[in-house]
Length: 351
Image 1 (spheres, rainbow, N blue to C red):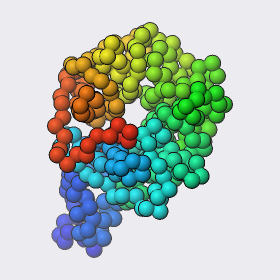
Image 2: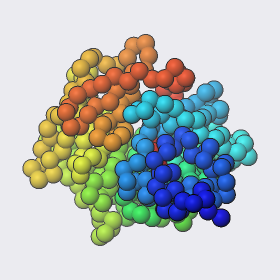
Image 3: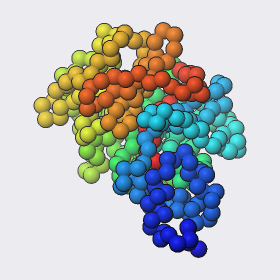
Image 4: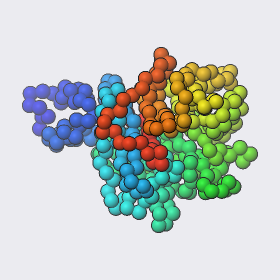
């Protein structure tokens, strides 16, 4: 059956890839042929190839502590929201969700949102939950090998859909001295399995840290920012890079344009620094224009960094443009939910 009588299929597909993602559910309902096209990974590869894909911010929002939550996608360049379908109750009925227990990332090559480390309150498992944007369904992944709090997480550019987990603590109330915290783990979304990486140097475990990929290498940055660990998947080795950074606290780490950026607090001022790998130096490329109380999350969205900043009375949202080095405050849609510090997680989405 032709998708539209009299028109070739290729032409119809070219028309469909220009339709914003928020209307795709309506398109799926038109006919089986359209539903098949919009459920195909090749369709979304074509959207990316023609620069028609949309970039948004996935917001994990806790509506009632500790287990009632929702995931919202905010598209800053169109200023609209999309609420994802709720996960089946049988998946999540035994979970307790707190902000420091899990990681929340988007695996672009597989069009999956992945929450890793959600705690099952009865048997102490750290579960994995995934949302597939192509089928618009949730599914459970294989449990995390070890539960850990405040770990760092980053997604490899590998086409296989690899999520790297490292650092963190075993018990929030105690200083952790645990051998398995020196190990890092890799979750393969496509194969739904975990692998273990070689251990870091035991003299420099990264308990409280952030992580990112640059040029196919996994960078683990501790919160003091004065040195970091780098893992090369090709040779399966870690190395330590010592830096000149004297920042008081590293807030978030972001890879953009083949460079490593991070936000740091200096005398209660938020600054964005770029690391020069060739000269082992930091350059301040942007500074938040007002005094702040706290920074929650920062994620890359196109050529801008989406930043969530806490002031003394509310949560504020900004875009920092990496090209012109300007800040722009975002007026969130009225239906955007109230910020909750204990629950918020952000992940950049491209679909």
